[in-house]
Image (cartoon, rainbow, N blue to C red; front, top):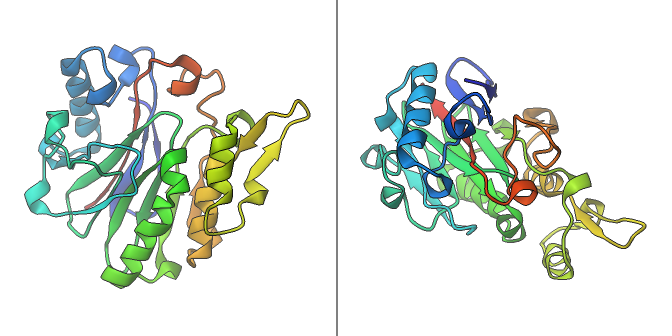
Length: 253
């Protein structure tokens, strides 16, 4: 099974699964965007085996492009792992202090953000499509960790996974207005092409939110892959309309 690994140290398992044409449903991990749920459960079981964990250790949310953030505890273990409807409702960012509890978010072109604080042991997984980005879900999640959990942002390690890139992300006037209304200067992340079509850099917007809150630039890995460009390794809703989803995941051992 192909995946991108983000590994700050041996204490965590983290990364992103990839599209794989040799596997059923191209290694789709999402129950809410599949042709056959049993196939997705088998794909998840195969990933669990590769990682050396049990399927019951996963916790997932019912993502809605919101700015809602939820702490995950031991009692949440297994939620969303077998049935989509059992996932944590109306939520797009999860964090936990627990060991051996795997959290993750599903995405195609949307931006996945994973966080790890080696001092408190807190981990987080954030789903930030353009709707989550204009609601500043990444900023809100980090602020919550700082204010509620006493996380020092200078200690945070961050991973921004594969997503649609600046060169491919055409947006409309309504989205431009919402990006411009964000709480920081977003001009560097908006481009107008000679043909008048505007582009947005969703990875860059999320990166800037992390930097503005004090996360060190050399603590942030930004995966360069563009999910929209023709590549068998990536799902793209914008390119293909009907597609599966990657899983960006993190667990502290």
